[in-house]
Image 1 (cartoon, rainbow, N blue to C red):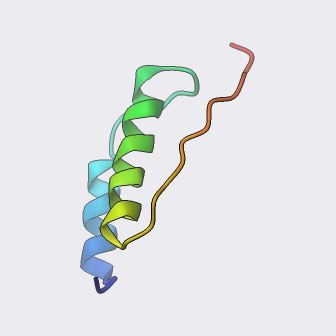
Image 2: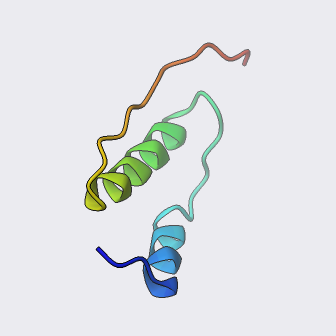
Length: 53
């Protein structure tokens, strides 16, 4: 899959929402990024971590 400026911009538009740490927006963004990584043939890993809130 070819990476282009248009594809990158489309991904940024998908991520145009509130993504506060430890909230549901953060996981939504992680899944969007994981889907983009899968699209180029790599298996992403989302790791959990503790964060003060």
